[in-house]
Image (cartoon, rainbow, N blue to C red):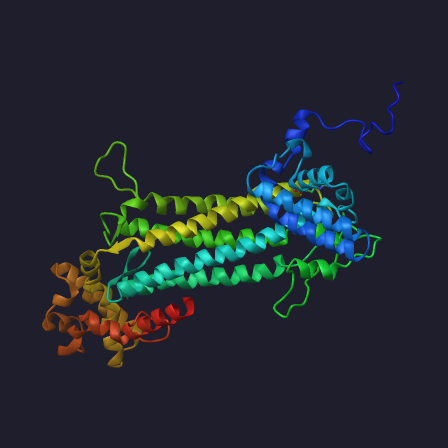
Length: 466
Ligand code: ARG
C-alpha cells in the first residue's frame, strides 16, 4: 500500500475535494460581499490577541497593515477571489498569510462558524440602518404628496366599493402609519442583531483567555448605554440565525405594505379611476399597442413581494430541522438574506421616487368624491341626532337609497316630499348632509379623515420626519 507522507497531506485530509464538490460547496461567489465586515472582525480579533499577548506588537501591526492593504485591493476591484478557497473568510486569511507570516496566528481561538455569524450581524446592522433611511424617504414622499394636494377628496373604499369620502392625504397617511410600524419592528430586530458572537469558537469557546468585551466594544456591539452586548451561549451563538429570520419577516411585511401601495397606484393610474398621472420615467410602453403607458415600477414592486415572502419561508425551512449547532446548511442563509435586503431597499427607493413624480388628477378625484351615496351614513346620523336608533336609521336610509335608484336620481336630488314619503322625521335641513365640505369638517375624532384632523396629522408627520 502506498504511504502518504504526513507533510504532503492537507492536515486531516489525504486530498482536497473534486472540482464538482468544490463548486457545490463554495460560497465566495456570493459571500465575498461580506469582505468589509470580515476584515473589521479580523482587525478587532487581532487587536484582542495582541492584548492577551498571543501576538507580539510587531505581529499585530503586520497583520493590521496586511488586512488594510487587502481591503484597499478589494475595494479597487483588484483582489483575486479563488473559489477553491471556499469562502470570503478563507480567501482573505489565506492571502494575508501568504503576505504576512504572522497571519497564520490570526485564526487563534477563532472559527469560521462564529466568523460568519459575526460578519452577517455586522452587515445586517448597517443594512437595517440604510433601509430605515429609505423607508423614511418614502414616508416623506407620501406626506409631501398629501400636503401638495391637501384639499383633494376621494372616495374611501371597502370591498373596492364606494364607502365614505376621505382626503387623499388621509389615504396616503395610512401607508405612513404602516411604514412606521415597519421601522419600529426593524429597530427592534436591530437590538438582537447587535450582539457579538466572537469568542464562541467553533462551538465551545476557547482555553485561551480571550477578552470578549474588548472585541465587542471595538466592533460597536454596545447598547444605548454603551454596555457591551455579548452572546451568552457559545452553542447558540454559532447556530443562531433568528436575527436573520426576524429581518426577513420584517422585510416580508414591509414588502406586503409596498405591494398594497403599488396596487393602489396601479388602480389609480387606470383609465377607470384616472386619479393620478405617473411620470413617464416610471412607466413603459407596449411593443404592440402604441397608446399604452404601463405602471411597471408599481407592478414590479407588487411582484417582488413574492420573492421576499419566499425568502422568509426558505430561511425558516432551512432552520427547522437543524441539530445543534453549526451545520453547513447555514451557508444557504446568505443569498436569501442578501436578496431580501436588496429587494426591499430598491423597491422602497423606487416607490418613493415614483410618488415624488406623480400628479393628481383633480377633476377625476372631485367627480368621484362627489358621489352623494358616499354620504348615506351621514344621512343616517342625521336621523340619529333626532333620536332614531341607529339600526332603524340605517334601515330607513336603505329605503331612501332604493327609492333614489328607482327614480334614477342621485340621493342628494331627492325632494323633501320624496324623503318624507320614507320617514316623516326628515326635515328641510336633511339634504344639508350632502354638503361635502361640511361633512368633512364634522369628522374630527383622532384618526378620522376630518379637515382639521388630517391637517393635524400631516403637520405631525412633517415634524416627526424632518
Ligand atoms: N461559508 C460558511 C457559511 O457560510 C462559513 C462557515 C464554514 N464553517 C465550516 N465549518 N465549514 O456558513
